[in-house]
Length: 414
Figure (tube, rainbow, N blue to C red):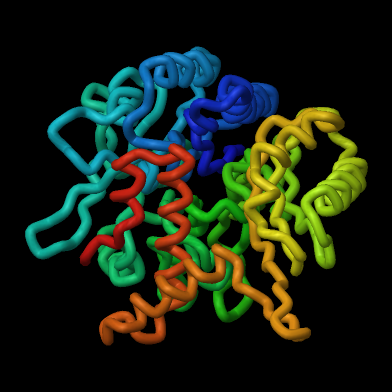
């Protein structure tokens, strides 16, 4: 038997109110369409999606329609697409049917979601094709269990998950990350908390973190796999391999092969403007360095570019505004999307001595870290919570997040 394990597709992701909005929106559908095409070519028995099929739980109707169009070839070929909900898919207001539930009712995916018992345990009901609901499905003798995003207490649920499973030849689809390999995510668990899963499941199909990694037992047996996101979703992912797992099952043994995808080129670069005495000199340094860095790209597609301006300068950083820098870039570069972060520090001279004034970014971070640290409950977590707060601020200012996604960042209680 053969199957594909992918996760974190993030359909619907784009840059709102940007000239590149449509092209970036299409990137994620092209990526999923390529995986579907390969599933048909390789005649797999099923496809697994380990959560975050969508970028947000409240998608546009056109995104839903395009998702159906993209998944249609799997449905026509009779290849089950088995999915779970990630933190991005989840709708926190449960008074309406979710888009994931609608896809499952229509037969484009089999959405796995377990029931809970009165004492807090799990019950994996058999999947019902009529209702499109259930927590367990059997294909060719492989028992597939699904558990979506359950928040910051995921590690405490492992024992209950294992206790609910009584079958053999088991596979678990689970939207959770491991701190050791994915430290920037929320809703992860510790490595040692995951190990009991290896006793019940021959293959644990993870999602959540966008970087691929493999988890082994203390004895060195691999049992859990995270393929990462097949397209580059956020800046910082330019250094990760991008792809999915093609898995062969032979005599009960799972043999995964990581297959690369073709994500849009992404660059995150530091532009050093150290020593520039005026804005014109800094602009020339800026042009020269960006040209050099873009020349290294072999991909002809317009890249995603994040630039971090660094160095001590002899003029106020506001003179080098983002609009002026973007106009300079348009003279020689074709970019899909550009983000510029100003970390410049101004050097002022006072009676012959140089005084370095902190950048706005440094001041913001210091003030917020002091405010967080003033509360005894958050001692020793100042840096983590400051980073999270600033990340939320940046997402809101960019308009790249909605209320459902922000709620998904809040850790849930057990």
